[in-house]
View: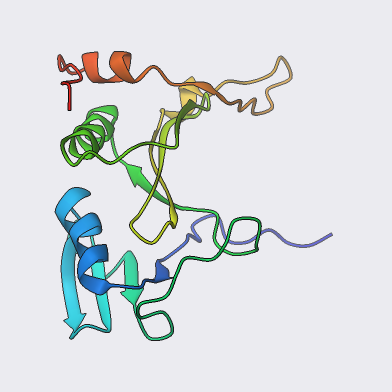
Length: 167
């Protein structure tokens, strides 16, 4: 039996290959609201929230002008940004609506509520918030019982007294 990893270990950051740095920055900074912490010309940029050094790195070192990988190949499925509250996830949804960015899906996983979309380079992006642990679904024996069901976007928006406006 192996010893589990330290319980405070976490994913530090993700670094994405992009075809056009300005286009990627328009999405991650302009739409999602991440902060640009450092930029190296047109070849790389580092983005974060809350004053951290970087949560996402973007670069064109091997991908300048390149096409996204074709479906059905290995690679990153998605990068997930965790929002601290349901209201902050609503804010993210409002930003996507304002920018006319379509969703690939929206799910209630019991432990979380999630929005799924693609960045300009077709990288998968998940935006979600975790419910408090005491609200996570459990089986009768106490095991975690995650699931995937539809997330009602209008209900999500209504939770902060907002409605979907026509595009």
